[in-house]
Length: 608
Image 1 (cartoon, rainbow, N blue to C red):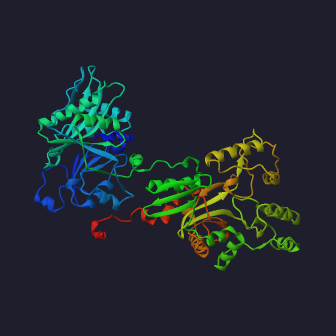
Image 2: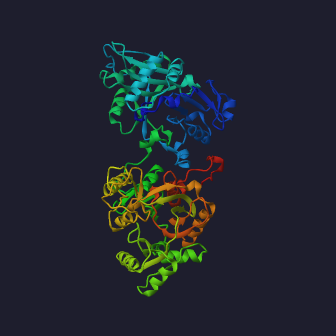
Image 3: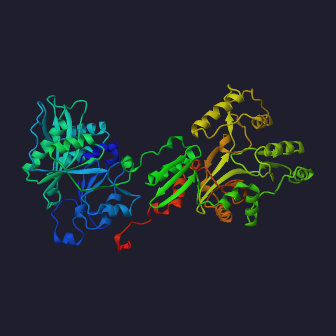
């Protein structure tokens, strides 16, 4: 039908392996025949003939030949990548879609029917234009060129040629006086396919070469197809057209087509996305990557997304009768108490220590000689605001009382309470735990530059900072501040020095992403003991979503210490791990991908 005008272009090679032309499928969706005999009593007792017709760009699933909706779902699940299957004439299609909303959708198209005893307008004759059946590979290639030019899914040449050689298809071409193919239309004879008791037919893939086809070519193709179906004695021809295609609808109605209540079911695949995904909500383009990844996953599942505060990353997500407010990965499911436990790093370390987890030695800065005594006891300190995020106010590697006083003064600019913590060496590990399950783990490394023997340190930092900003949507930049200059000086360089070619220079002490740090996925290498400890930590804090920061010699070994817990971790930093998917699973468990095939036998009945 004409709704294939709305598809995207598929690579023909993706479909080369498809050799089916017509299938009857068994209860599990497997083909049991490659011909089209009329239905028998035995067929009906076994669930009907279950007719599936391969058109090259996808398969037509004739829903009226199925008595079991679960079998229809099985067939649609077996759709080939890059193709688009369409189920039409299914009884109660809304029931099937309601059972599998993550997989299937009702196509937003209208079905029109033309009675073939209807007299068509006689203005469909165009001088120099002739109509004939598709014959060979050259014809099929020409058809594919027109399909591709109009954003339609193309089909394997051999499938088009083989189909045109059967009585099931009327694959007509419009040819101009120069022998150029300028339009195409495909008719399917339902009687030839499955001995249709309604004596019907359908129309698919009507399109023209808009650069070469004369005006009226589309109407002339419809008239030519209708005339051939009349010769076969068919009663009607149906087509499907997108509801928004008002121009085509006016043409069909002028030709005598009228609306029917027939609906089509399709699978949620990349080709069909624009048909089932909602329009981008207002403010979507102003979301940061951490809110946008949540919005994208929600929209992919058909969850309504409202951007309530784009600058804040706040969304209102609605599915059915359930609404949840989120700010990036923070949601209403995180209690105020759990959030406060993560907000104050002193409280975090106390709760984790009481749960038997390993944390560095630490204390709250008192502003007297006891701070220097603690420094002398542990040797080196990390000084950080008790509350804060994104690495603000943190000083790493404090060794002297003078440096301690300066670090405390810096930290108090962000929070009046300051935490002194023993400096532990190791790699900076971030573990994402959602619904008390480890979803992702990544090692974060401080910002670094690599010398080229030409540019000085300041220029290299600027270049690397711009690269990090471009890669993270502006979220990651290397600040050129006192800490950066100090780290560079400790390595024996000045900001004006030219760094030798190939020399790697770390320019920040902390691995925070917002100050130019990089992140490297290590989920597959994470030691089970670390994973178990992270789950224990999330339960101790009683928080459903958290990013736990640890120091480890290496992720593959069990040794670790917890540094802090983040109540709003950046989910966009952990690709290819399914952080956004697991977050939306937590918010809307009913939208999870099904773990087994739905079957009416397992569904509860309703008295409504």
